Length: 139
Image (cartoon, rainbow, N blue to C red):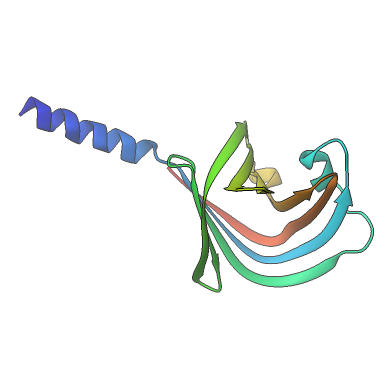
């Protein structure tokens, strides 16, 4: 009986502590940035020409299991393992695709929410900054 209670309590604690963040993206601006200081510097500026793009995407990021699912128009397109850095309200997430440096930066501070997707190629970054989006956090 004690074993069953222990297993049940561990399951409940794990379930309560799981953290999933869903981001629904409806519109982005896309541009290329050259930056030698890193991804945070690259996404902080909009340089040159950019394209406004309507989209219907959703990221389901599971920080407990280190996984991501990406949906376009409600259809699952890709799944990936992730690694992430969490600094207060800023999450820097890299998707683990061999040979590709791709990820997202999420600011979950309610007064300053943002969502930026990036692809790095040398010192060049392709950036998509979400202009219309929702961040849905669960714990």
